[in-house]
Amino acid sequence: MIRIERPLSQTFKEFTESSKAGGIILILCTLVSLGVANSTFGPAYIGFWHQYVAGLSIEHWVNDALMAIFFLLIGLELERELYNGELSDLRNAMLPMLAAAGGIAVPALIHFGLNGGTATQAGVGIPMATDIAFALGVLALLGSRVPASLKIFLTALAVMDDLGAIIVIALFYTTDLSFLYLLGALAVFAGLMTMNRVLRVMALLPYLVGGALMWFLMLKSGVHATIAGVLLAFAIPYSSKEDDAKSPSHRLEHILHKPVTFLILPIFALANTGIIIGAGWTTELLSANSLGIILGLVAGKPVGIFLFSFAAVSLGLCRLPLDLAWRHILGAGLLGGIGFTMSIFITNLAFVGANETINASKMAILVASLVAGVAGFVWLKLLGAPLATDTDTNTLDFEAPDTAR
Image (cartoon, rainbow, N blue to C red; front, side, top):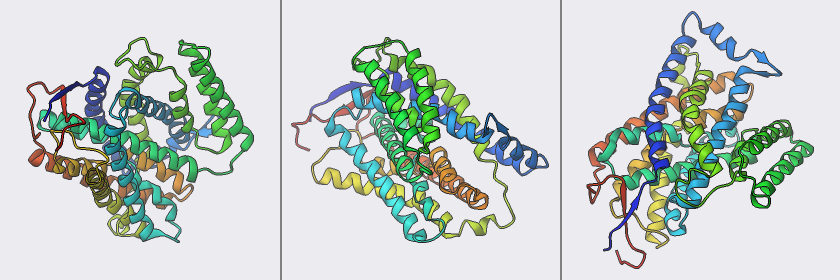
């Protein structure tokens, strides 16, 4: 057995620390939103988000515009992982990639099994998603009691999970497609890629201006406008050097971390969790759609992540880091059941105009995310100790490729 030290990047450490605080703020905003919505101020509070400004409701501005910035950050994080993170080496990438595939497929199958052929079939994408901020926030609360490589694994898994959700949104939650506007958006993207790869433009401003235009054209095309954020991320120049402060992509990711964590996601929570809790809300949790969401997130996520990971390792496609055991993978799977942001986001797309179904789905998401978060935290607190504890928690132990396990 050969020990290889791999330092955690400064960008990654900043990301996980902000996730810890961001998760706490999201919880507080959700509680405030639920409290106000069910108080005497409820009608005014909900009415505020439905007011129209410049052709869109405030809620739509939050979900279509502000969340495009969130998706931009997700795209930048995915790009970092692909260049010099856990996804940069195919053998290392296979484990979180296949785990994410299992965490997408099994919850979707559970929901479809309960709702296929019904009016709520469109909710199949809701339990597919993992909330990065919440999942890493819970993991950050455990500190050095869990392996550093588990944080890397869960981050890569959640990023790939979000990529899967983005693809699902683009393919299955697109309405009234306008090819003319879509071609215009893709033409802008091609222009931005030319600026990057051919002209080597390193200033951020031209990319941000082009990104805003691409967002507008994508909004008009019928494809959800947040997809423009992901495309913009991959059009911005990236340096393969770790933590290269001069890289436009690195600079933008650093700029966006705090606004997204402490402003955009809290506003999203306030705008989307104003759920009226009626007398029969517990009964509604037993509906086919709500059960599909709850079982998909609480049971489907850990089962899918664990089984696909186990199969990948058993088939020799990849290996576990030296300080991880299968109990850690199961713990990560439990935390993967925290859907929240992405699940709520897909709910709004799946059931447009069906307010009662949206409210019931959001309640199911909140219940499932709470159960998954608590279960994952308790499991890892009791059973999450590293197999080989480093004195320096900022290093990872990996097995050399030619070493037999």
